Length: 384
Ligand SMILES: [Fe+2]
Ligand SMILES: [Fe+2]
Image (cartoon, rainbow, N blue to C red; front, side):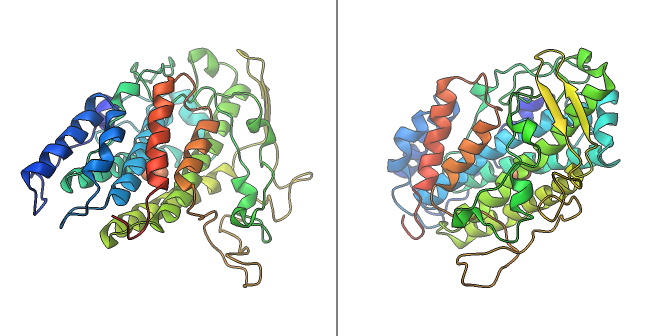
């Protein structure tokens, strides 16, 4: 692979499709859908219901296909973000090609943990395999894969080490909800029971902040460079906490046991990602800075000291604290939260959009993603 776009392109199964009762009629309908997905994008949504209205032996239900298509799109988006981080503060190599590294930014990120570059590399490779596997599985079942290549139009970093290619995501105008920090430390609150939580880093929720150096000018002030590295450090778990909830939320509506197995198996690695990153975020050094380009202030507090501190903020509480689950009448339980299945896909899309990572994308992108989310949220367990 020479660049990020090839890293994200679906890889057709090399051994061909295996759909046992693959009749010509379903092939033609499926081909229309696949073609629409590759070229016209939204075309897939107009044709998908007729293509997947029946459950074929060896195939998957329309609902399962919709769940997997939304997840494929999310994984493509994850890969696009992680690829940009890997180019600047990870380890570009044959497993994760593209970019050439940025020593100053890599060093600032390593303040959080000396193994950050390796973890960033491995997270990036994981996301590439998630999107490639899900798309290949869809195709193996005669269902249409997802392709977002037409939305690889956003400019990326101009700093040393970054590839100069079009991106799907924008990592330079982030606005981050870091309430997951408290959500996983609270012993009394669960978002599925209506509880809300304060942000760990309030200033990340206000204004727009770069998670990568925009140009080499961002490398010159060590204080601001550390603020960018800390922003990245809190963006990583903000990404992965979404997948941690999304997979178990959607799994509750999978019809096929094999699709359920895929969701449980990939979902577990998203939990691994989140667990790793929330541990590292707790190592972000306290720093205050002002963005020299936008004038936006940014402040990372000591989370172990007042007005923070206590169990809701303590940095070494990295295991999910027990909390109410299903009912406050039942004993507290250490769990992933939220896992409410209703509206899970649209909720995930809203959370991603709220980060500012799609700033610059056209309406067609949001329409396409919203349709995929709606189709996934309409999936019903046991309904073909
Ligand atoms: Fe993933
Ligand atoms: Fe992930």
